[in-house]
Amino acid sequence: IPEEHTGFNGGAAIRISASRAGAAGEVRFDVPVDVLSRMAGKTSTIALTMQSATSESSSISVQCQFGSLGTCDRHRFTANQEKFDALFKVTLPRGLTPGTPGALLVNPGLGDAGHSVELFSVRVLPGE
Image 1 (cartoon, one colour):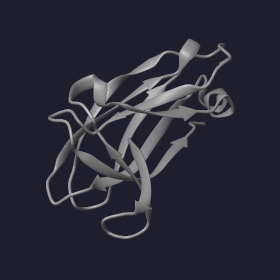
Image 2 (image 1 turned 60 degrees about the vertical axis):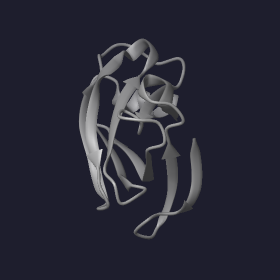
Image 3 (image 1 turned 180 degrees about the horizontal axis):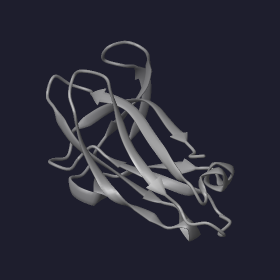
């Protein structure tokens, strides 16, 4: 459940909380068609700047669902009190044109319901 506020270490952030453990705790962020078009046929980097919302660490995962361009493997990270960039690369096929937005699925509840992370930014850096 996203909630806007000032992050644990300062700066604008969205607090993402898992209302349920496992896949039911995923929060969906849309990736616009124009961004997917720029990613098509390239290896792009996706970066999420985040930290744990509490003094405890939180196990999170991030997955991609890019419609006709495919998906990406689930990437796991551990968020602590320190702000960090969760980085991973995605290679999308050539010759396909996305017709609908895609999504990033962020799950802060891999271990248990109630875990939260502060999300400061989501960036997609299309490859050359």
